[in-house]
Amino acid sequence: MHKFAPGIQGTQHEYREFSIIGDEHIAASRSTEAISDGTMLGQFSGASSDLRNAKSPEERQMLVRTMLRTLGFNWLCYCRFTQIGEMVSDALYYGTFSPAGWPKKYFGEKHHEVDPRLCFASRYEWPLIWDLSILANAREHGRDSLRTQRFIEDAERAGIRSGVTFGLVNPRNLDHSVIHFSSSTPGKGWIVDSVVGQAYAVGLSLHEFLLHHVATPNLAHDMSGLSDVQRNILNYITNGMSDKEIADQLNMSIHNVDYHLRQLKKRYGAQNRVQLAYITGRFLSN
Image 1 (cartoon, rainbow, N blue to C red):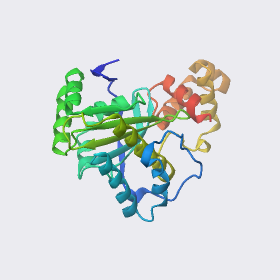
Image 2: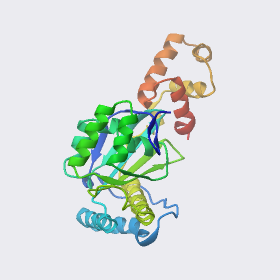
Image 3: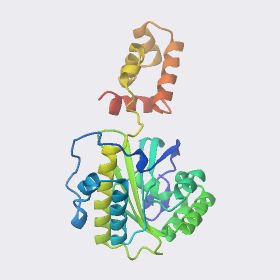
Image 4: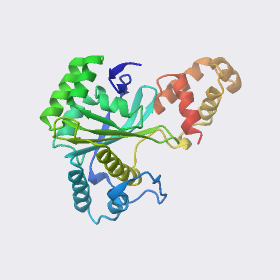
């Protein structure tokens, strides 16, 4: 485990491309299932229903911006992705409440690959209270300090100087969500416990809303697209069978088994056989 800074630990992840989305990608509710876990707090405990009941994107944006200003934040960034080991894929970034031009800068410069906040939140579910000095300390301990320094300089120019970051993990699949609240105020001393609690309530409300209204490309590709051979191979590798054993079971050559495994790893973003078995056991077999 690589130490980034006091309280920030993790290793650098390998990312595929992020899809940047806005309100134009928000559709009617995809589900009527309530997912609130009862952890939303304080005056923003009804924010999720307020977001759902907003009559227009403009009304929804005004609601969120008002909540941000009330808490002392200027910006909110939300991203959701699938993580397998150190591989992060099938990711989206909701940039409506980001500083102007920040999503393009952030991903154009590949800052997401060295952002210590993202690494922390993809591993832990407790909040990270940060400012630029914390991120600078992460740079000193990181593997790519020059790139991290450029990220910090760009964040400073964008007015991203302090904030709190939350990670949300869905235990039923491989999805992770990360929510950044940020402010132009230097230093993190102003971010007291009550601010963290209310920010979590707002973030969870937005997470719930987006989870129901924005479809995420993920590993849940339609299993009907798999051949019977591919389905059998997935089942066999989860049982720990070797290529030779699979070939004997399916009456085919080891070369053909290897070919199908390569195609399956490519389809589901797995780097190796272990990850493919993990995906099958945790997700595709549901």
